[in-house]
Amino acid sequence: MHAIGIVWVGTRTLNFDATVRFFQDVLEMRLGRSRPRDYARFDLPDGSFLEVLDAARPGLTHFSTGPVPGFLVDDLDGGRAELASQGYELIGDVGPRPGDRAPYRWQDFRAPDGCVYEIIDYPERPPPTEPSGAMAVTKVVWCGTSAERFEEVCRFYRETLELTVIEQTEDLIECSFPDGSSLEAFRRGGPMDHPHFRTGPAPAFAVADIDRAMELLRACGVPLILTRRRDWGGWAHFRAPDGCIYEVKGFAPGHGPVGEV
Image (cartoon, rainbow, N blue to C red; front, side, top):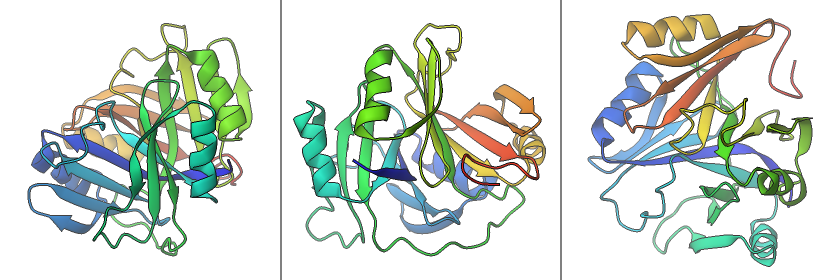
């Protein structure tokens, strides 16, 4: 399966209104299509998007392992067949549901870390636009997970998603997608694990200036759980109103996501 990047994140929450306000007012994402009380879509400048789904919305009870990242693939049907042949659980039917005019198809599945993910076929992905707002979120640039079945997750990244390994040790693996985003797993309980990574996969949103982003989060009263600054940039972990952990990640001039400068 040729996985190209992370183009979607979905979260199902009991705290729908506050979660929508958070992504709209604090992270300053652009609110697109929405419905009162149960659905909101935030469109990111690179053509990817975030969906916030109310917990009362039917048919999504399997969204119970935290945020659900969606991996763009070049062949959804082939990807489904490969997941099934390798024994991974396919959850539900191929979307969209009858009557839904979404310009993409998807398949939910359960990965070796026990969490739910999607593969997505998105031929009509919108062209890139300029970021807006002081936060200047551009894309979903990274996703991390804490895994008890660490070796199986490593094999899944390398052999099923066919990702390039950037770094691998006894306790972590980081792999890159062709679009420059990356996927990282930490051995549960190991020295590299983050104890707060227990709300499922932790997606990271790329921002123009990580120091400015941290200032804005603090000014909005958002506690930062873990921050790091490096020569290449830095990141900050925080908890959103859906109860899940997310990250903002920024790069210094001359640096960028894997494969970008």
